[in-house]
Image (cartoon, rainbow, N blue to C red; front, top):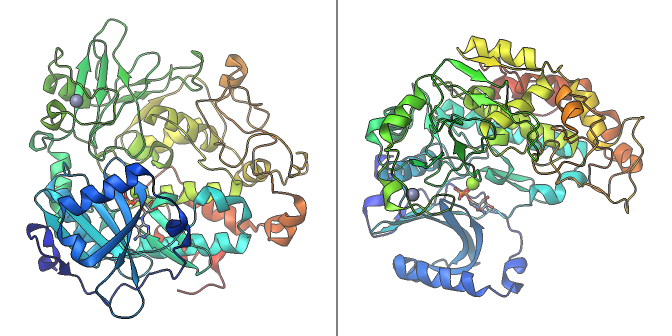
Length: 543
Ligand code: ADP
Ligand code: MG
Ligand code: ZN
C-alpha cells in the first residue's frame, strides 16, 4: 500500500482498478446538456495544462464540485474499449501539504473501495498539482431530496452511512467532516459513498500510516507552517485545524487557509481593550451571542492555553492581504497551527470538538452522523447553522439542554459557563414539530409560503421566526430567536397524506432512541458505528 502513494510521480498509477466499481450508471445528460460556463471551460483547460498526462486518458466534461481545497471534475476515461467509464477527478489545491495529500490518498487506497467508502483508481501529479481519480458516483443533492425521502429510505441511508463509518473507524480513521456533501447518495441505484478524507486524522492506533504523521503534525503546532492566525488591529483571524478563539461581545470566526473548517467564515475579535482574553480552562457561554442580528446574547470563549500560543505566535502588527477572503497569502502560509484539532463544519461538530478537547476520537463522526439523522427526521437542512463554534455549542445546548452539556463537558475536562438554563428537548416532539406532523401544528400545503427545508432549524441570519417551539430565555429577551423552529419550516410538498404513505406517520421510538445515542454529549458513551448497525432501528436490515 505504500506504493500506492503515487504522489511523487508524474506518471499515472493504478490502484487496483478493478476494486472500485461504486460507479453509478446514471446518465451524464445533466452535464452534457449544460453549456459549460466560460469559467469552467477555462478551469478545465488549466487543469489539462497543469497535469498534461490527464489529456491522454480523460475527457474532462464538467466541474462538479468546487471547494476551498479542491475542485472536482467529471471526466470520462478514453482508454477503455467498450462503454465510457465515468471518473471523478479531484484536483487538490496546490498549496495542500504533501503529507496531507498523501494521507487523504492513503485513506482512499487502504480503507476505500468497499462498504460505501469511496475508492481511488489513479493518482496523478505534476509539480505541485495532484489529481485523484475516483470512480464517479452520480448523486443527489441532499437538500433537493430531503423532504421527498420515505422513512424507509432514511433508514437505508443511515444504515449505509454507519456501514461506511464502521469501515473507516476500523482502520483508525476519524473522518472529521461527515456531512451530506461528503456522503454521496444515488437514490435510484441505492448506492452510497463516503468521500473526502481531506480532514481525516488517525486514532492513536490508526492503520493508516500517514495519518500518524498528520495527527502529530496537527498537535505539534510549531511544525506546521501553513495555518494562520493574524492579528489585524483589534481582530484576529484564525485558521488552521486548531484555531482557538477568544472573543468579546460579537465573536465571529474567519477561516481562510487550508482545510480548517469547510465552509466556515468567521472572524474573531479581541476584548474591548484590545487585549486577548485571559486564559482559563473555561468555555464561557455567559455572554455568548446566541442570536446574531442584535446583541442578544454573546458568549465568551476561554480556552486553555491555546490562546496564549496564538498570541505569542502572531506578531500583533502583522497583517495580510487575505484577511476575510478565501485566499491564502504567503504570510498565512508561513504561520503556525495550533493544538486541538478542529475541523469540519460548525453545525456538524461534536461538543468535544467545539470545546477543543484535544483527545478526539471516532465518536466525533458519530455525532456528525447524528446531526444528519436529525436533518432527515426533522426535514431541516442544515439543522444547525452557525458560523463559529460557540454559537454552534449554544445551539446544541438548546436541543440537548444546557445542564446536560455542561455536565458532559466536565467528563472531557472542559467547563462551560452558561448564563441561562435551557432544558433538553424531546427529540420526537422536536422533529415532528419541525416536520409539521404534530397535531398542534397546522399542516402545510404545497403553496404555503414560508421557510422551507433549507431553512436551518437554527440560524444566525434570520430573526423573524417565531420561537414557539422552544422558548429559550434568550429568545424571550431578545426577540431574536436562536431557535428557528416555526410552523412553516419544511418543504412545501410535505403533507399528512404523504406522511402516512411514506411511513412518516409512524416513526418508531427506535429512531429517536438511536438519534439520542448519536447525539450523546459524552463521546465516551456515544454509540459506535458498529453498535449503531445492530441497533433495533435497523432490526430487519443486514449488512
Ligand atoms: P472537498 O474536499 O473540496 O470538499 P470532496 O472530496 O468532498 O472535496 O468533493 C467535493 C464534491 O465533489 C462532493 O461533494 C461531490 O459532490 C463531488 N464528488 C467528489 N468525489 C466524487 C465522486 N467520486 N463521484 C461523484 N462526485 C464526487
Ligand atoms: Mg467535501
Ligand atoms: Zn493572509
